[in-house]
Image (cartoon, rainbow, N blue to C red):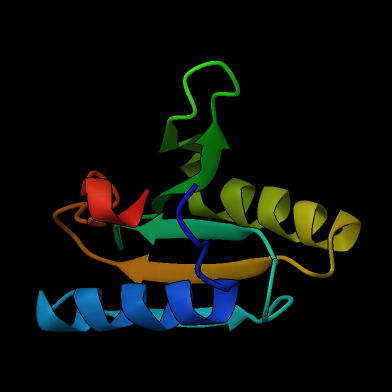
Length: 110
């Protein structure tokens, strides 16, 4: 089993990767530094958004990012805020990109 990165280190690395790709991304809510879950909200700056969370398949052990909620940005924000009210350890990262780039399809970010 490979060692797991803390949430804080993963978030810092993700923000750096986005910055290097000229994709604006920032922390909206800080969660638990060690083991907080992470939501990535992709804002396409046209009134629409999509929020991703990391999924884990217990049979294959595969980790991947899946859509948590998508649609009008206001509705996505409501869903994210509701999730955050249940889980105060949750990190929320907002990515703003008109092209819809988020880098989450890179296997190194799973």
